[in-house]
Image (tube, rainbow, N blue to C red; front, side, top):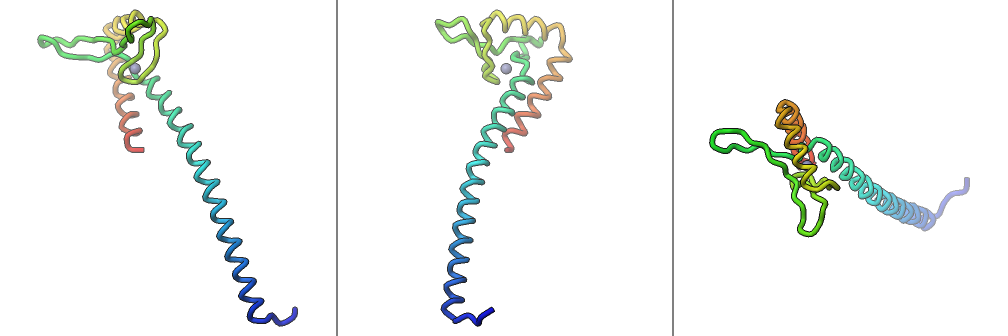
Length: 128
Ligand SMILES: [Zn+2]
């Protein structure tokens, strides 16, 4: 191996530096892109999980009694309804909401189990 002149060292090091810089830059761009995609995928996944856990009804107190009412709202002029808590769309409209209210008024335990899971999930998502 022949002895290298000082300028050859400088040139070599500069080229290595430039190469590293571009390499890091390309890596960073690739990483950012993937992270964005991954975040979006994750958001969709969380959204689905939240909708799955949402009971689509709420319990409120009236005259010392616990009552259940649906969270579905039907925008004017449409037959569909959506849950104001999780955004789930119901093709059946508010009628479908009434079915849920009936279902949960018979299955209190299930409502509380779902609500617990729902609150746990939303707390987790807010932390992300
Ligand atoms: Zn819901």
